[in-house]
Amino acid sequence: MQALPRKQLRPAGPIPGRHQYGPMLLVALFAIAIAGCGGRRYEPAQAGRPYPEELGQGSMIAVQVFRDAGDLIIVNASPQSFEELDVWVNRRYMLQLDRLAAGETRRVWFGDFFDQWGETPVAGGFFRTETPTPSVLVQLQIDETSPLLGTVAIPDEDRF
Image (tube, rainbow, N blue to C red):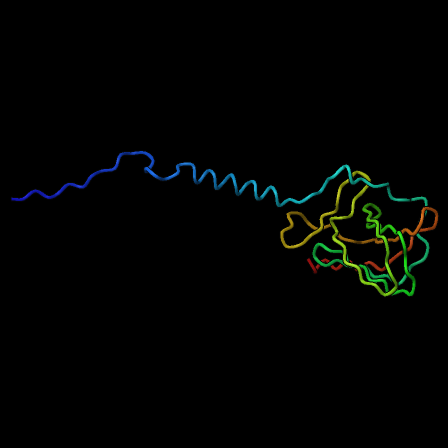
């Protein structure tokens, strides 16, 4: 009678040639990637001035403002051009624009707006992790003494 050949058993432990820390490394890289997707929300160096309550709002102008994912789209349907203006959103966040020409459509990223503490609104978009900040009230400030100009803000939340 002939003996059957015996199978060699592998020793317990890591398989030679394989990295035993591979799964842990993948988890760590995934956690870092997820944390990096948070975006900027607070930059004290970008802090602006507080909302000019004392100016109040004067007239409404033919400027429509609406959101498109993380962007704010400003449509100047008036015959008037504006130079060196500040765009205020929700009486808190401000962005300085060099010019808004008559008939111009301007697309700006909502994350470029800052408040007096350097915080940005939640811009939105596909990879957002928080509920986007709605643009309920949008006003234009054309100088330091004139009342703010009201715009037609279209807060279409279904666009997100």
